[in-house]
Length: 166
Image 1 (cartoon, rainbow, N blue to C red):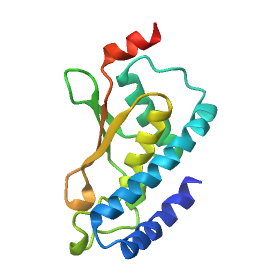
Image 2: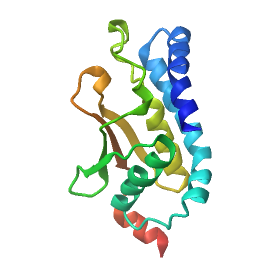
Image 3: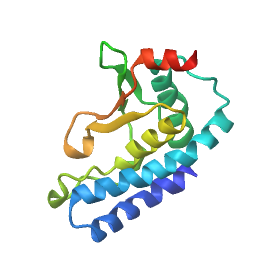
Image 4: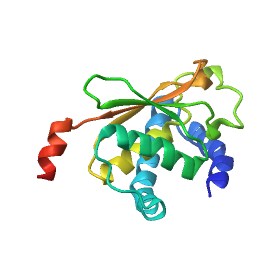
Protein backbone atom coordinates (compact mmCIF):
# COMPACT_ATOMS: atom_id res chain seq x y z
CA UNK A 1 0.00 0.00 0.00
CA UNK A 2 1.08 3.57 -0.62
CA UNK A 3 0.75 4.50 3.05
CA UNK A 4 3.07 1.71 4.17
CA UNK A 5 5.58 2.71 1.51
CA UNK A 6 5.54 6.34 2.68
CA UNK A 7 6.01 5.27 6.32
CA UNK A 8 8.98 3.03 5.54
CA UNK A 9 10.66 5.14 2.86
CA UNK A 10 12.59 7.27 5.35
CA UNK A 11 14.08 4.15 6.94
CA UNK A 12 15.15 2.93 3.50
CA UNK A 13 16.93 6.21 2.70
CA UNK A 14 18.53 6.31 6.17
CA UNK A 15 19.91 2.80 5.68
CA UNK A 16 21.29 3.68 2.24
CA UNK A 17 22.99 6.73 3.76
CA UNK A 18 24.66 4.41 6.29
CA UNK A 19 25.67 1.97 3.54
CA UNK A 20 27.11 4.57 1.15
CA UNK A 21 29.43 7.45 1.99
CA UNK A 22 28.70 9.54 -1.08
CA UNK A 23 25.32 11.10 -1.80
CA UNK A 24 25.80 10.35 -5.49
CA UNK A 25 25.95 6.63 -4.68
CA UNK A 26 22.74 6.86 -2.64
CA UNK A 27 21.08 8.80 -5.47
CA UNK A 28 22.14 6.15 -7.99
CA UNK A 29 20.90 3.35 -5.76
CA UNK A 30 17.52 5.06 -5.24
CA UNK A 31 17.16 5.59 -8.98
CA UNK A 32 18.07 1.97 -9.71
CA UNK A 33 15.61 0.69 -7.09
CA UNK A 34 12.91 2.98 -8.47
CA UNK A 35 13.59 1.77 -11.99
CA UNK A 36 13.01 -1.82 -10.88
CA UNK A 37 9.77 -0.80 -9.19
CA UNK A 38 8.60 1.08 -12.28
CA UNK A 39 9.32 -1.87 -14.56
CA UNK A 40 7.05 -4.04 -12.39
CA UNK A 41 4.50 -1.38 -11.47
CA UNK A 42 3.47 -0.58 -15.04
CA UNK A 43 1.55 -3.86 -15.38
CA UNK A 44 -0.42 -3.10 -12.22
CA UNK A 45 -1.03 0.46 -13.41
CA UNK A 46 -2.31 -0.62 -16.83
CA UNK A 47 -4.55 -3.31 -15.32
CA UNK A 48 -6.02 -1.13 -12.56
CA UNK A 49 -6.42 2.11 -14.50
CA UNK A 50 -7.76 0.66 -17.79
CA UNK A 51 -6.23 3.62 -19.64
CA UNK A 52 -6.06 3.78 -23.40
CA UNK A 53 -2.82 4.30 -25.32
CA UNK A 54 -1.65 7.91 -25.08
CA UNK A 55 -1.35 9.67 -28.42
CA UNK A 56 1.17 12.34 -27.40
CA UNK A 57 3.81 13.14 -24.87
CA UNK A 58 1.50 15.68 -23.24
CA UNK A 59 -1.19 13.00 -22.78
CA UNK A 60 1.45 10.72 -21.27
CA UNK A 61 2.65 13.42 -18.85
CA UNK A 62 -0.94 14.15 -17.83
CA UNK A 63 -1.61 10.44 -17.34
CA UNK A 64 1.41 10.17 -15.05
CA UNK A 65 0.26 13.15 -12.99
CA UNK A 66 -3.51 12.73 -12.92
CA UNK A 67 -3.79 8.95 -12.76
CA UNK A 68 -0.53 7.32 -11.64
CA UNK A 69 0.51 9.79 -8.93
CA UNK A 70 -3.06 9.94 -7.65
CA UNK A 71 -3.38 6.14 -7.66
CA UNK A 72 -0.12 5.36 -5.90
CA UNK A 73 0.73 8.44 -3.83
CA UNK A 74 -2.62 10.19 -3.45
CA UNK A 75 -1.41 13.47 -4.97
CA UNK A 76 -1.89 15.12 -8.35
CA UNK A 77 1.08 17.15 -9.60
CA UNK A 78 0.61 20.07 -11.95
CA UNK A 79 1.97 19.42 -15.45
CA UNK A 80 3.69 22.03 -17.56
CA UNK A 81 5.37 21.67 -20.92
CA UNK A 82 8.79 23.25 -20.92
CA UNK A 83 9.90 22.88 -24.55
CA UNK A 84 8.75 24.05 -27.94
CA UNK A 85 9.37 20.54 -29.28
CA UNK A 86 6.75 19.20 -26.85
CA UNK A 87 8.99 16.51 -25.38
CA UNK A 88 9.94 18.12 -22.04
CA UNK A 89 7.54 18.35 -19.13
CA UNK A 90 7.62 19.26 -15.48
CA UNK A 91 5.58 17.65 -12.74
CA UNK A 92 5.19 20.15 -9.92
CA UNK A 93 4.19 18.66 -6.59
CA UNK A 94 2.51 20.93 -4.08
CA UNK A 95 2.63 18.05 -1.63
CA UNK A 96 5.11 15.19 -1.67
CA UNK A 97 4.03 12.39 0.67
CA UNK A 98 7.52 10.86 0.68
CA UNK A 99 8.77 13.82 2.73
CA UNK A 100 5.86 14.06 5.18
CA UNK A 101 8.13 12.97 8.03
CA UNK A 102 11.26 14.86 6.94
CA UNK A 103 12.00 18.37 8.17
CA UNK A 104 15.20 19.00 6.21
CA UNK A 105 18.27 17.23 4.93
CA UNK A 106 21.34 17.24 7.18
CA UNK A 107 24.03 19.69 6.04
CA UNK A 108 26.44 16.83 5.31
CA UNK A 109 23.85 15.32 2.91
CA UNK A 110 23.27 18.47 0.85
CA UNK A 111 23.61 16.69 -2.51
CA UNK A 112 21.28 13.84 -1.56
CA UNK A 113 18.25 13.60 -3.83
CA UNK A 114 15.98 12.14 -1.15
CA UNK A 115 13.10 11.23 -3.49
CA UNK A 116 15.21 10.04 -6.41
CA UNK A 117 13.33 6.75 -6.28
CA UNK A 118 10.41 8.55 -7.98
CA UNK A 119 12.58 9.40 -10.98
CA UNK A 120 13.55 5.77 -11.36
CA UNK A 121 9.93 4.60 -11.07
CA UNK A 122 8.78 6.98 -13.79
CA UNK A 123 11.73 6.13 -16.07
CA UNK A 124 11.26 2.36 -15.61
CA UNK A 125 7.52 2.48 -16.26
CA UNK A 126 7.95 4.65 -19.35
CA UNK A 127 10.62 2.38 -20.79
CA UNK A 128 8.30 -0.60 -20.44
CA UNK A 129 5.78 1.13 -22.72
CA UNK A 130 8.58 1.99 -25.19
CA UNK A 131 8.92 5.64 -24.19
CA UNK A 132 12.53 6.12 -23.13
CA UNK A 133 12.90 9.23 -21.00
CA UNK A 134 15.33 11.12 -18.84
CA UNK A 135 13.76 11.88 -15.45
CA UNK A 136 15.41 14.17 -12.90
CA UNK A 137 14.60 16.40 -9.98
CA UNK A 138 14.80 20.01 -11.09
CA UNK A 139 13.76 21.57 -7.76
CA UNK A 140 13.27 20.16 -4.30
CA UNK A 141 11.62 21.76 -1.28
CA UNK A 142 13.93 19.74 0.97
CA UNK A 143 16.79 21.76 -0.54
CA UNK A 144 15.07 25.11 -0.02
CA UNK A 145 13.41 25.47 -3.43
CA UNK A 146 9.94 26.99 -3.62
CA UNK A 147 8.46 23.83 -5.15
CA UNK A 148 9.28 20.19 -5.81
CA UNK A 149 9.64 19.69 -9.56
CA UNK A 150 10.40 16.55 -11.52
CA UNK A 151 11.54 16.99 -15.11
CA UNK A 152 10.68 14.44 -17.79
CA UNK A 153 12.39 14.60 -21.17
CA UNK A 154 11.16 12.07 -23.72
CA UNK A 155 14.21 10.96 -25.67
CA UNK A 156 12.56 9.98 -28.92
CA UNK A 157 11.32 12.69 -31.28
CA UNK A 158 7.56 12.82 -31.83
CA UNK A 159 8.12 12.04 -35.52
CA UNK A 160 9.93 8.82 -34.54
CA UNK A 161 6.85 7.67 -32.63
CA UNK A 162 4.58 8.34 -35.61
CA UNK A 163 6.82 6.36 -37.96
CA UNK A 164 6.94 3.42 -35.59
CA UNK A 165 3.15 3.12 -35.54
CA UNK A 166 2.88 2.83 -39.33
